[in-house]
Image 1: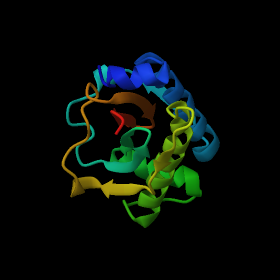
Image 2: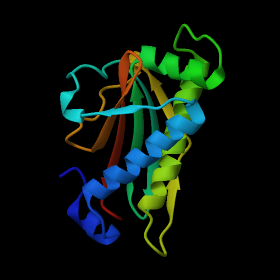
Image 3: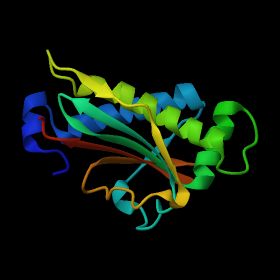
Length: 167
């Protein structure tokens, strides 16, 4: 189980419902903000090292629960998404790419947080931290977190949510 049963009980939900909300949020964001439809693919089919040296946009959650929301893209996919968002050619992982990935992570976290707020509790999100290519240790294993994957162009996008117990 990727999400602590206490959290699921407090939210009166299931992992399946949280994944369905996350899927809706991700598809809506890519459709409206990037202008592309992303096709869900099974997380189980992802190659082990596919997201090694990727571009990751990370948002921390704090308050009623703690955790992270991450959007992880191989460099070629991150450049493709940035090109679509900005309407210009992008040929390297530069500031435009890290800004675009950070903004996507921010939109996903901002949308998803509404599904995990309990009445009377506050949930804050941080500005995005973007880690590019060889700057980070590892992408979370899909079995350790809520994870969804999408096909875009020549690669995949991995979206992860890690939720930990309340304070």
